[in-house]
Amino acid sequence: MTSWIYINAIIIGLSCSLAGVFLVIRHKAMLTDAISHAVLPGLVLAFLLTGSRNTSAMLTGAFVFGILCIVLIDWLRDRLRIADDASTGIVFTSLFALGIILVSRYAGQTDLDQECVLHGELLLSAFRRISFLGLNIPATFLTGTFTLLGVLIVLFAAYRPFLLTSFQPQYAATMGFSIAAWNYVVTGMASAVTVISFEAVGAILVIALMVVPAATAWIISKRLPELLWKTALISIAGSIVGVSYGIYANISIAGSIAFTLGVIFLITALIKKKIGAVSMKKHHQSAIHNQFSNNQ
Image (cartoon, rainbow, N blue to C red; front, side, top):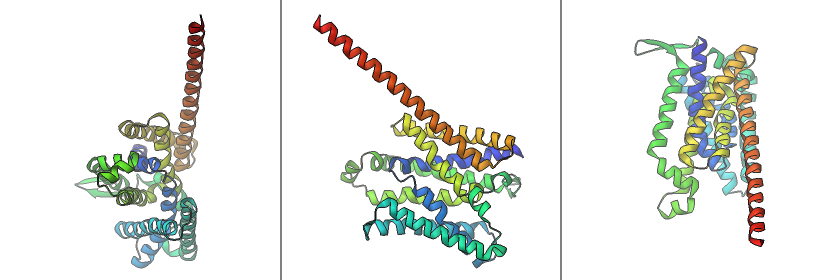
C-alpha cells in the first residue's frame, strides 16, 4: 500500500510541476494559489446539486469555478485597472470564503471539511480502488496518469507557442501568435491540473507542487528544455523524501512534501549565491591581476 502513496505523489507532482513551469516564467505563480482556493465552492455546489461525490460532477464544478477565478481576475485588472496581485487576492479570498461558508453550512451533507480541503487525502489514495482493464488500481493513480499524459501532450503539441510567448512575447506577436490566447491556454491547463489534483493533495500541496519545483529549477537554468527536466527531477525528489519523512514521523504527508520542496529551494538558492560570489571574486581578482600586468 505504501508504494502506491509514493507513486501517486510522484505522478501528481509531475503533472503540477510541469504545468507550473509556464506560470513561473510568466510571473503568474500565485495564480495557482487563487485557483486552488477558488475551486472549493464548485466542489461543494456540485455535491449539493448531484447528491453524490461523482468524480465527473465534482471536477466539472471545480473547473467552472477555476475558470471563473481566472476570468474575474482578468476583468478586475483590465476593466477596473486594479493591480494584478490585488485582483488575485480579492477574487481568491472571496471565492474561498464562499466555499468555507458552504462547507460550514452544509458540512453534514457534503462530506467535506477544512482538514480535507487543506491537506487532501494522499495517505488514503492507495485504498480508494477502481477496476480498469481488469486491474484493481487506486483511482488517484488512474486520474493522475491521464492528467500527466494530458500535460505532456499539450507541452509537446504547443511547445513552440509556449516557448515564444513565454520568453519572446513581442517576437511571438509578430509571428501571429496571440499572447492573450496562449496565456489562457497556460492558465487553463494549470486550472485543470489543480482541479484534478485538489482532492488528493489539498490546497496547500497543490500550490507547492506547482510553484516550488519550477521556481527552484528557474534559479539554476533559464533554457526551457533544461527547465522542464530539472523541474521534474526536483518534484520527484521532493515527493519521495517528503512521503518518506511524513510516514516515518507520522505527520501530514502533504505538509511534509511541501516543506521538503521548500528546503530544496532554499539549499539551491544558497548554493547558487555562493557559487556566484566565488565566481565574482575570481573575476575581480583576475581583473586586478591583468591590470597590474599591463601596468608592468
